[in-house]
Length: 349
Image (tube, rainbow, N blue to C red):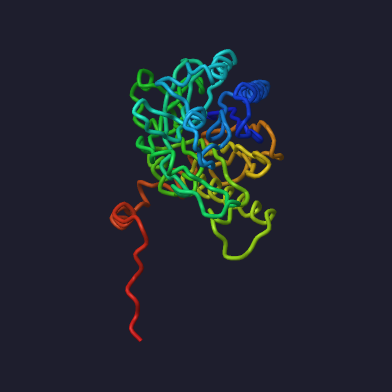
């Protein structure tokens, strides 16, 4: 039986350090309305949705820094962002949004949440685990920095999949399963969230895959040219570097969707921020065979839409990547017992 969802990625173009939050918020609401016009049930927004990607800057004014974070226990009630959740309620569209989270004790996280418009509540929260970059800026004044390790702590919520109600009519429930013994692939959709650099780490995807994930959501901000940050084996032009960054983005989303037999949605914050910081686009929707179903054509505000059938996950989960039959966990101990690379001993002459 088909399990059809209509989903969208809300790609957001350039947002500058001095951009007015109210103006950015209106752009997000417009994207949500565009998705509603296509019949979307779920919309993914990017990492740090409501502001520019502020971890690239070294702040000397703490008040300015704090202005980029969301404070308080319930983001849906924050005056800075509340209108987006109100519009989601009005349109009855679920949304996933990323933001800088500041706890009362001063701890910062790069966070995203999944919000159910029909239930009017946050169903799940994820905090970015794999923080890239450095704590201190590079010596060169022209370098593109990524100071997430300065402003955020690594996420502490793990990779916890969750079910989303009210998206699939007829989804099997605890109360309705009766004598049904095989409930796999018949209940409410199973989702997982990650943020930007997490998509490059297969361990994150496999954690979700082992929970039967059917759709992974990933908001991102990815630089198109940052030689100090990423390095390169050979000199590249800005155009070549951007092509390489897009290639690696697609590779991560397509290969991991395939290897975990799930759909994925990625939403970019993209464009040229502050006339200097170039971020890639390529927001997209990928199927469980690793094919791109839909992808952004610009580096501006753009809504990317697709209709997906979660039943398409079953072939991979039950054949090629039937984990229960084919995984050999007795051989994988090194993955969880070792962090850095330890090479074999050198050979004798």
